[in-house]
Length: 389
Ligand code: SAH
Ligand code: SF4
Image (cartoon, rainbow, N blue to C red; front, top):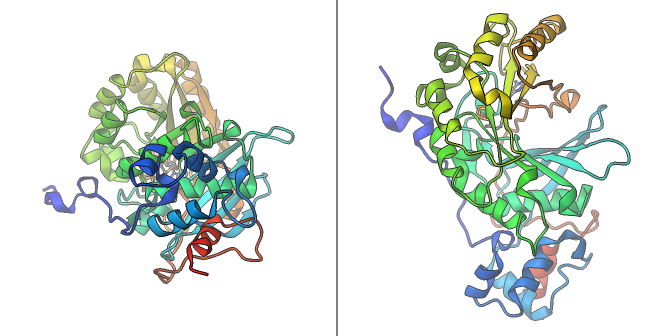
């Protein structure tokens, strides 16, 4: 018997962080509506373009800094740990103002190429409980706010570069199910893509979902609309429901229906991720079923095969290399566009599905400054500007 509605994680919204609005998620019109002094586009630009930040804080008048400190939350996530991997990527652990931690991965393209892909988190933990995923094993702690998501990206850009948004690719493939936190995730994307701000492009932002159909259908109609990636990971409802409980709410047929309604613009592709679990979903019959399920989507898609990243919270194993290659070759023969993704950052547990942090003790009300530790923390500086004297 299915569990009562309230026990279904896909029906519940995650806990939200409370508090004043984050300055990092306010659009120019919000700043104006709230009575921020100065020209709202200018204030927004100084907040969002990290290359305008100064060691001593935001490059804004004392009056505006004082207003921001009094009317908005200027806390930024803080990079607490950096774990460089042999493959050139770096796993970052970020501390949030209430003491929780999330992770992100910095993935430069190649030497000399200024472009960088950031894999970012949208929630602390995840409610969806996929059985192969380390984040899923944590359960859900809370949603990240739009301000925390924007802050996560800005702090990474500021400290690891590049500072030009046009060179940044963003993938929501870190901790959490972004469509379970759609309002904040979409707000963050809107802010990051605003032409007066850091100038990211929705073409270069990918939101990855485990198949939350209600979210896919909402996102399909939203502007700006990022690129969509779907974690498929199984080819029968029985197998998919066993590893991805969300399939019990929206099965493969229903998921396919939502994807058919996602109108692809020119040059857009749907991305499918398929985690290969040895002996579970890696047979040639699975490859055949996968290609059949894709059907006419085959012309407008890419399939990323991700051999299971093993971790202590799941018993699944990575298939042997020959099996991975045979699976890829079969899909290729059947007309699919396939890439085998050796997840980056494996040696530092920064790869897909390995992102998990125990929640640290909360430090409510404490905004960590960065005095003496590298680049400016405009939050602390602006707060200081607001203090009398
Ligand atoms: N919640 C979203 C995005 C975060 S998970 C989603 O599920 O799509 C990002 C990707 O990591 C997903 O494609 C997921 O299937 C994959 N993943 C999860 N655990 C994994 C593991 N142990 N090994 C390899 N990939 C994994
Ligand atoms: Fe959540 Fe994605 Fe992990 Fe599933 S794979 S538990 S949806 S983060």
